[in-house]
Length: 433
Length: 94
Image (cartoon, one colour):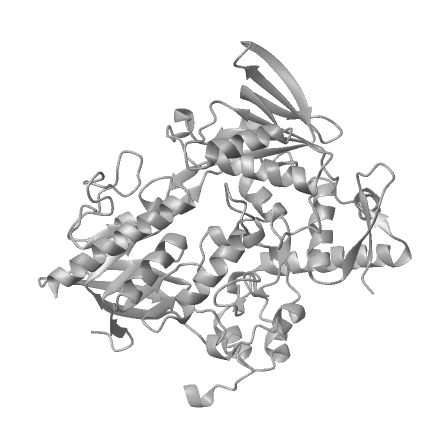
């Protein structure tokens, strides 16, 4: 074996540090198992940590996620690798797995960084901030976001000019440009896939004008605009900085649409749109908010009441299918739609449009397993061969699935799914020991 | 190798191995120029996005993006809202 490859052994490998992966890791560790949690991003917390509030309780998402993330980070039986990717997983003759992974350089000594942000201040570079969905800039030396875990700096080497300003500014001398990728070969007994989902890119529906019309945004961009750590001082149109007062939501953008390759319902868009509409009514009390929908699917506990509450607040609901969005000289958007109830085509002008984008499968885990195939379902989510009795089982014995890696679901269902996956994994570990 | 590394001055080691792409240099030049343009304009008076956009000959959305970045970096702050309750003006952070 190459002597540069580091080795270690754990009971469980959890792939993905979002809310499902984190919950799974915690459950396993709380039952005495040694866990390696591998996250490809610079911080754990997944998409939930970036949300404004959650439905239907309207609790602050960060306030729920941050203590959980802190518990995961401090747990003595959980080792976290951020900025790391699994290369392959092979099952050995004894039934155990060997995982090869690469930890990418952060160019910062994590243990020495105090999160003072002096490197950020000194860095002259500004590039779009991916954690603010490109609405504002960030530096090449940066802390990913204010509640990131670990809350330490990283160098975006692709956009770094190698000027050294960050190193000169760093009081603890923790910036280290000599870091290189580190390879690991890890022995594990079980694997839990919690790789989450991808969001639909609305650029694939040109008639909605996303990218061309700057006042057409995605629901994830609106999440950031509504969050306490938002990119703008208040809610403004990205096209010209106007405070919007007539907003529209277009539901089922990239869901229930075979023409874009995703015929299934994303299960969360109706409710997160209603949530955002309620938050907008709070932030912009004079604003009109209209939701264009095909069907409102308020199927969960408290969801129908939440929908009724939105109607009571004055949010308009129009059963209508959007044909095309165009822009007028004022930067306002004209929605041409079929009013499904009346059966006629209408037009309506709004000053900002939010596309409620759907959930797509993250297929990254499917190619990782060698010798035995991780089967995907018809829609490319991880297949659940025994969905009614043991929903976390996959096509490979000892490999389990948690959260939206298995299909669209909301946060409470992701937590439940993580509970199921960790229970199955604990049962499996007890059986093989 | 570890013994030779001078802590706090490690960028020189990477400079020997890696070239900075011309696109990164161009982006830095563009940002520096726009940052100077915005800050110089705001030194004279508080301005709206539209007024800044005209002064800098930049599209409105780009002006907004750079202005919001400068707010984040601590150079600019939000000012008053116009009489129509539509647009804010922006000013230098003192």
